[in-house]
Image (cartoon, each protein chain N blue to C red):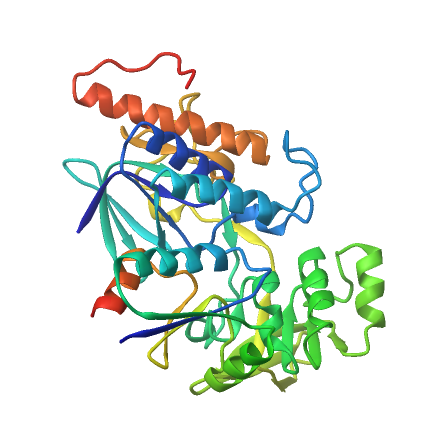
Length: 81
Length: 315
């Protein structure tokens, strides 16, 4: 099963709509989904591990796939492809 | 190629309002923009937007955006690069090569953040070069960063970063800042800020990640390499109407000339907000322009189909 992780910050205008895209897709498709606050302990580890420089960043199966808000169609492709 | 009834370029107050109005007329609407919120992202407090006092510009824009998406507008992240007139409307090409078609188009991209225009910059946008300090500052905890600029935005970005970054280089091409005295004092007093006056950035370096920024002393022309993990560009905004100059008339400020229905000289092509030659550049006037452009776009399509256009709309 695909694993999607969204790294976000509370102050970012693009993060809430990005999370909404993935939440909506979860209603249509089955995949593991996690939202990670960049300021949490886990978030800081993920930021270091993936060298994340901008949020929202979406990690698909352990690889950064989207920096910034993804296009809905491309996000859907990422979970179905 | 995906086709919409309406393509809206820009997701600030004008573009998002146009999206709300066109969606409420059940036209399919795509919004193409590099950001959501436009110039309002820089407004700390909205003081003069009726009914919305004391909240930030980004918060107001988040509300606009949610409303547009709720009505069914589709957001397409990207930068418009080329607009072509086709038999049925318009073809839009983005800088990433994606293409879309529409019957009508509304230009509402206001002013866009100015790039540095130096070697290596494009490679690291979103991967070390940030245009949104409030979004990205927390991911630069215990890292070294550079902030470029000397106005309020640059000073406020540097001040915000003092809470997260280990070291902040504040680089400004002149020998004095343009920003507020109070913010200047705070930044100058911060122990982790090093100010480099009379310096200009000349190259961004790095292999898989951003590693350094080369700056040049404007007087001596001596260069030095600053080891940084991130760069925040805060050098202002520009009006970019070059990509549609063949389809519109522009004034001496390169603003797009429109009539009171927000029509440009090309039938089916409308413009709204800061990108137009309107005299006032306010959130509320941009939203008003967006509503007019949205309804005019609807009327244009109705006329094209031989249907009656609306004269007044109270919905």
